[in-house]
Image (cartoon, rainbow, N blue to C red):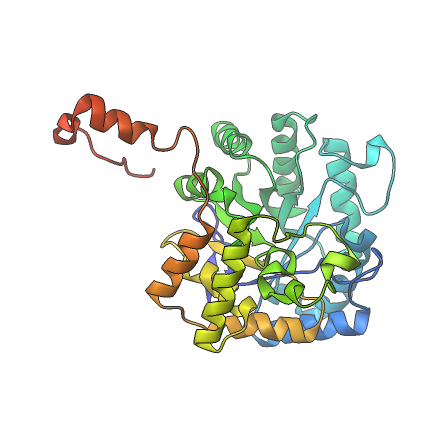
Amino acid sequence: MRYTTFGRRSGLRVSEYGLGAGNFGTGWGTGAEIDESRKIFERFAEAGGTLIDTADGYQFGESEKFLGEFLGAERDNFVVATKYTQGATPGGVSVTGNSRKNMIRSVEQSLTRLGIEAVDLYWVHHPDRITPTEEILRGLDDLVSAGKILHAGLSNFPAWRVSWAAAVADARAWAPIVGIQVEYSLVERTADRELLPMAEALGLGVAMWSPLGGGLLTGKYRRSSAGRLTDWNRLVHREDNDQKVAVVDTVLAIAAETGATPAQVSVAWIRGRATPGVTHLPIIGPRSLAQLEDYLGALDVELTAEQLDRLDTASAVVAGVPHGVGDSVHNAVLGGVADRYLPRALPVV
């Protein structure tokens, strides 16, 4: 396992995989019992993994409770990340959302379940479309000042809100936004349009959840519907268009060429797209020790440039407007004259 800092806006050191603990517990009716969860946690640690990513709502709080038991005296060897927005248990309007009231309530309860004094990385899980950005940022800054959290990030937020939040926090000398969390895989690459270029420009770390497209990229749904598709039927991709069929075909073909599993090929592709100075960190979410071993095997898979290109081509998304407009205007109107005066790209500051 290799290590990196989580983006350029913090010195937080993390392993190249994050262990998603959404399957720790069975409160949702599916997941791993405590003994299997412990085996997953211990094997991940043995492999050198340090970042554990959970949320107050995962398994209605069971995930945090399990993780609190597992950390024990080794807590300082791990980077603990959790989230708030949804709440651990169903409740009224005051116990969900991103308000300062719910933020303070949620972090205190998470700290109790986890049995720790401070969360290393605290995520706002989802935008609630109500709470002002300034209220969220000031609340996070207060939690940093109080020593309840060390770093803050935004999960599943659109690029315009993240960039606005980062700018406001910087302008007011509040605790910075250090990273984003977003779904990303060979069958979900729309983050390439705005979110990933924004993160690179601003120096944000990127945690990428569901790197196997809810299991689609393993190829198992071509043989059976067993898995998340039937057990949970949420956050799952299906081969419902020609491109997804082509992507799975390509993954399976490269798996046959390399001797790796389709899951390993899919995660190796994300690792192969790493950009110098940018943290692209897959959040793996195994439900069993066998699934974790499959993920860990991807650390030894090196895809060729030709194989990476085939996967890139099969999975590419249309950038859409306004991407490409500037180039067409430059070529058609300016005729390249500006090349003698203006740099093609300004340095990131």
